[in-house]
Length: 290
Image (cartoon, rainbow, N blue to C red; front, side, top):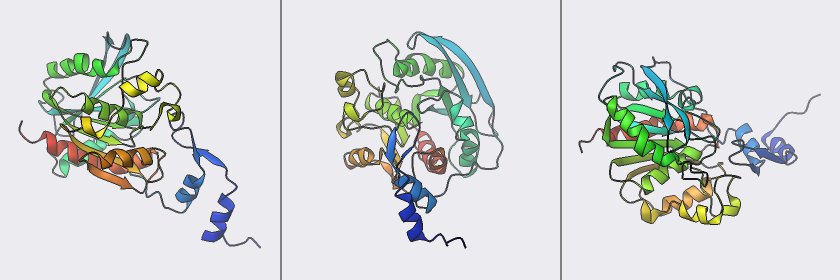
């Protein structure tokens, strides 16, 4: 007779699971408790992409002097808006290993955007761009500079399309969540709102993912701290079972930010669950006249 799988039996058997890789190359090895918490439903439900129409999506590419390569980009409009609508814009920054298609392919951001607008959030467009598979959205020793690519190249391109770039927002997850906070740190005044999901934050260069920084000096130069995140409206979310949760808690103590630490892990399911709140936050901030 097969023994009944009780909560206690599950917890005891899980001690033999060892360690689990969560988030692939970016997060590395984390305690096996995440498997246990997932099995027990303690990481929360995965977000389900809403069953609503997608709006227009316009894509292209350009040769980036800042990144020294050709990058792809997309602009995503909510359903009901024309592909040349003069809307505020949010630059969406992908995680490690991603590209400008990840927002739709991995998170269903096109449909969540329509849902947000239908729910009463002031309409805005999303702009995605190739930031580099492991650039961590900051200037690298190779000369690759994803942040400068956004401000010096992508934003002018978006302005030519009629999108409003005098006041814009940023949103990122994982590597891109760190990138969004870095953009807020270095804002020139046009960036008015930044939202981050599970931002990749570490307390020391030794703890960081391989290749995330070009040594200790680079790590120190591109840290985000509360003292330099005062001029931009913030929302920062992270799952309790995310390997970045400790560093995110530390940062949240030093800033004024919406969001919080919720049930969740470093997964696309968690990020999809948080997108409605993140979009509501950004749309509301961008909908306030400058």
